Length: 612
Image: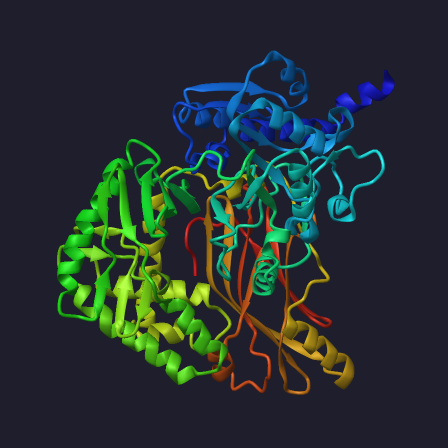
């Protein structure tokens, strides 16, 4: 009794109860819960059994797709086999208690019995070898780390499986055919569905801080590790989650089309919320379709075909094409276009060190875009990743953000350069200052155009709060691994120890400070000058008012422009940084630059909008 009384009066216990309740609300009601099934071609007259913990949003999504839905908890399935009811589709979400339910194979046998002869089991489950569990996320069922990769401990009966283990259980349960899909970031709150026939591209998997229910560590940069896994061909083993289509017999229920990829754009104002699918038809032809996710977004989808005709007319006689769009059956449909993405081509040149060729490609882009800048019509999204190259013909594949307005062409060029600098960091050619110089944009105009971009993003987003921000709003910590240092920092540390370098002075500048949706964003550069005349990178940390390190995302960049201005003697101009972290109203934070014994603290007061 005394222990219960102490727990009731413990502020930390009450705080945890509040956090658990808020996460439960998110779990049950977040619209993205339904994304796990919205893309799948269910037929209206199918009878569906939904097996899941309670979620209003998920149940609503299923009921909007199928007329007859039966909902059961995972522990209720064993008792259903004798009632004689059979289903066209079973949708199962989450793990099971292997002690009380006879294990995964036994569960698959139950589902096999409950399905009609041509029935389909859809299994949305976590992967115990998911990369996030290696990167510092706690297990879904247990408040601890690495138990899934380690194979679980004795007594841990709520167990996820690996890809091969799921396949063994499914085939052991009698299913003849399995198709593999990969919800990202995971099956609980997915925004993208990949498949074995359409895997992610390098640098595409960037939305990795999603610990809505528990604290996590950040032991490495997941995006970079994903890139390595994709290159080695083992992404499908380490995907965070699986969506498995399991058929009782080969062929089974077959759709005329197969969805290879689906992306949900829901963190927008209601009138802009859409879904983009890549679909393969029975004859092998691929098409791209954009669907409205709300009634208000239907008009937005209809405008895409209108935009196509207007923009293609502008491009007549040039080496620019716009990918055709036709509004049909409530969607904007375009053909699958072959070619090399302009941004990927530029990245190849940069990786090879072909600076002049990379600059020439950027200048060619600027030249080719010029005919598209006319009064009364403007595609503001002419970024490099939206353009495909096929010989001398360049095709713009996405022109969703086209407006019948007079907008400055220079701002559109600025957007392209800004996104290029963010998406291809670490190269001298893609430093924003250098890109703006190539584009003929004055440094004095940068602040104004950045303000335009900020306002544009607010216009697109409306009052929507990105679900990724819920990590902060729910009070969960993202704990940095302090041992993680950049390659340049490790090399400098080695040389400090080897040659006895001694930092005597810190130099830094904050180019940009702003606050948006509860997150602080800091950009600038910092370095240390040694007594030996060398310039070296510094270690950057953010602390709260209690002196605790704050979880933050840090991107390091080379700043050859600063090195040139300082006439610095350095092999490591990795001085630029872009930092973002949750900045709660009631707290103050300190930005710390450190190199050896040299340290500088900067108190960050409350930020209101953009500051220089």
